[in-house]
Length: 349
Image 1 (cartoon, rainbow, N blue to C red):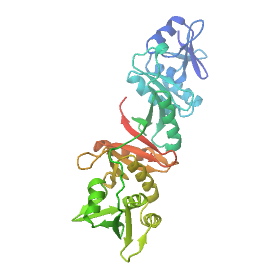
Image 2 (cartoon, rainbow, N blue to C red; image 1 turned 120 degrees about the vertical axis):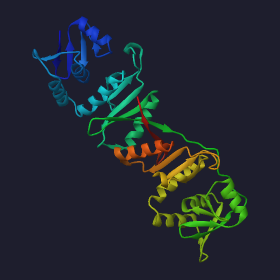
Image 3 (cartoon, rainbow, N blue to C red; image 1 turned 90 degrees about the vertical axis):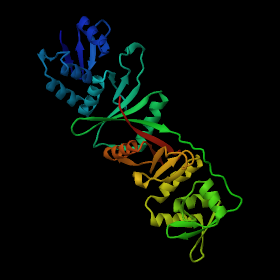
Image 4 (tube, one colour; image 1 turned 135 degrees about the horizontal axis):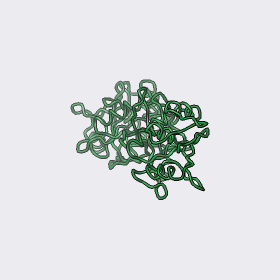
């Protein structure tokens, strides 16, 4: 006996057939008094896989007709269906979600009566925009429920890429410690140069700031601003003008893009005990070490972004694939209070 289309559901009245479909894949929802109720995404999948015939007013529907009808009932049905179909083909039990998420995914072979979802899934197009403030709330919600957040991104050819999203709390072993005397530096261009050997020892060899140029330690503007704010560096210009942290930040804003945004992230990571270096050659703001760069490999690539940043999926894809190619974790440092570190990781379900 086929299922009968009823606007946004399909009803299988025959108890035997309904039980068989439910038991072989946990499709649908058993009805009191027998029978099975399927949502449209399940019914469409079963029609495509030739496991169910659906009729409308007694007339059998083809897969194309079923798909077209479902698309009129639900916005962006095509995107959600492609992700559902892919997850089902991988052996997962999948249910449509009615809230902000599109799908809930249960372990392979699970029984609905005693199982909880592993993943909450957002099904999106590669053309969609990701709003970081919304995304941050989604991460917090899924983690509070003990689940993982996945984004299934559908490209223009219908192929899928999955990303696992999570919040992180990165920490390091190199907390800044103040010196008895502030170092003296000379501002030349966009760099501060340190020549006193004892200051080089403290800042360069113990603090892991800057880079040696012969017997001179050169500090970036961001490093210099942070060390000045900590009270451990005095800076003068070539003409003898004394620079304040505020003047240094003003110089950085005038000469470098996103200076205050990057400085905000730099401050926080340094206070977390991490060693922070430029990530320019990796296409990120920073490469970040948990300990000494002399003995450790950089664990993270960090990109600082505004709290209300809107990102496109091709941009995210490029960044994530680059970080994977160099075996580093990519974190987006979301500015604001509280500051957040959000991880985007390519994922194979």
